[in-house]
Length: 173
Image 1: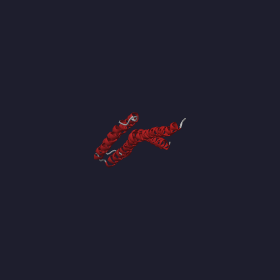
Image 2: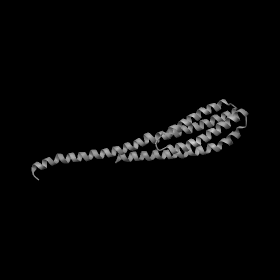
Image 3: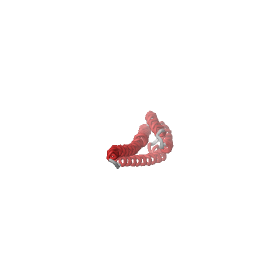
Image 4: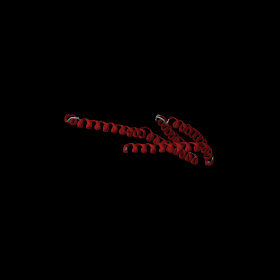
């Protein structure tokens, strides 16, 4: 190899090394972006909606207990508003890619609970029946909903933890 070829080999080698570095950086960045998109577009919104549904469920339950204990049918209307918030959370959940089945499961359990609880509370609030009767009748529909919420919350938190771990490992590579 003559001197002229050796001189030209230096910039060619530098360009090749630079190109490989850019390509590796792009691949690592793309993987990290993928993990960040998973967190941003799927996992975080799903956890938010599960929490909103859980809040709505507890608010419905509390409002209906108050309605039955006080014999106030107006509180049943308040609980219906909370049921609307729960339905809105389920509708938002259904739009999250990959979470359609979970939203159907939660939606079915929520509908069963809120229909049973609202009808029982309306009847008991107007008849001034004992509140223990309401509690017994609604527990059957509330328990499956609480269990489904707990399961989905655990799955979502595990998914977020996994995505965060993947994100961190992809950045550190």
